[in-house]
Image (tube, rainbow, N blue to C red; front, side):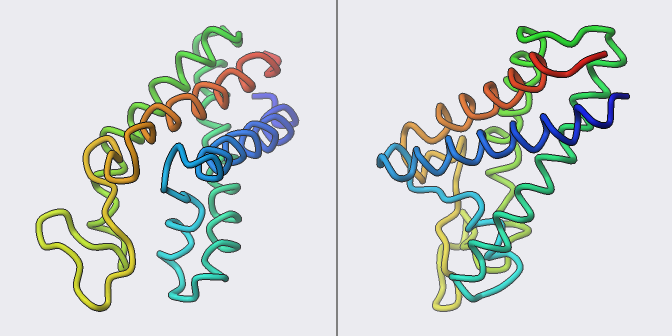
Length: 157
């Protein structure tokens, strides 16, 4: 495994993915702020949650870069199309499985079946994260496809 490429391009791909998601929120394409959602799992302080969430999201991106690199190494293919394909699978998993499961693990998010109570701060994403906007799943898929594309394009076997 090419550790240098994983570290460098995993960092770059994660920064681009996070920027796409943040830009989507800034341009009102989605209401979700994924680093904030992740950070608010760790602290009730909304300002610190953004910082903690960004750091955890960055670390997760690096860890997922190792998974992508393992797929490149196992298949013997490291290319833009293959990276895009893995990113599409990754993004689909995030929207179809991870987002709807998030309220079960998140201490400050309402459950889909029970609704909010006075201590809950965040709305659950719902199926395909549609509670955060109709374009949220599309934006999430695009961000992950770009992430995979960067890794596939620049990773050297």
